[in-house]
Image 1 (tube, one colour):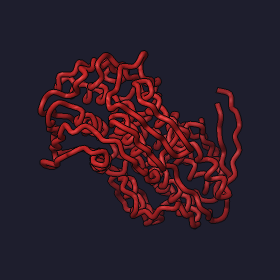
Image 2 (cartoon, helix red, strand yellow):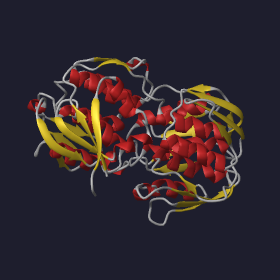
Image 3 (cartoon, one colour):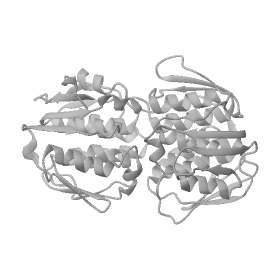
Image 4 (cartoon, one colour):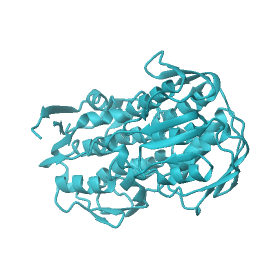
Length: 421
């Protein structure tokens, strides 16, 4: 096992670091370009494990995807996906897995959507149930991948479907993006109006409309999608707001000035809402609702360890079904730094702030559970407290392959050592 131990810089971090392109937007527009007839040029894209799995899956279904440079994809498609010769393997890419599970309903043939051991623990049953209600033969024996979908070659043929999006907004986004390839208008109805991360639905609709789809917001719980199919287009992808939170956190913790090239207010991604909350450090609110900025919560939770007063995180139940149980991982990691620094109450996380941790040295080996966001957020603790070791640091490659180099460019030093398992 590899561990990476960070040396606190002892000075403000200053410089310029541009985050990679948005994972959420990249995987959305890659799929939409694959469903669009013609050639689409996607610039500012993220090249990471998650997006490369999506690109490879599209290639397996007859789409030509080339990569002219480090931040671009060129996608050439007939607008029709064909059945792949073997199961689509998507690692632990939740967006790619959920989005493709719905999209392959229009394939004429059987498609198996699968992932690694971690993805095989992530629920997908609500989406499978919705596909079944739409007349698509779909099965996931365990309620998690692998999913077998028998596409009908025509897409959705019914006029409405109800989906429980409380567990993940990605189920709703998956149906939305697949719907324009159907035979008639489709009403996508939420089972209740409660859904985490509604901002990501807005992100999905905006991307769809850029590729020529027509989506009507009938109510807070109903979207009507018309069978327009998609038109190829050129699309520029903004930087990743979730990645930006680590740089905002590094700036705040060290009192530095890091130019990320994009002002916080220019982001359209929901996680950018974290900037206004984080800016209140070291006097963060006593309660923070993470429902609309879920991927930013690990960053803010580590920041809260150095806050002047305790912080309770609410609205974060969905974090239990991410790449790992992030609520548990955060609690365990914080308690590695100092026993009693955090605890769980139901699906809430309480961080008992201890600003005196700054300047101390501890022996804390952080189990990342192979989760990129746990690794990147706990690296921030290493900027203030000595002895923070990050297990499996390479897991950041899922969304931010250059993360450790970015920190090094700001003057952060670290040491990687191999530990016996």
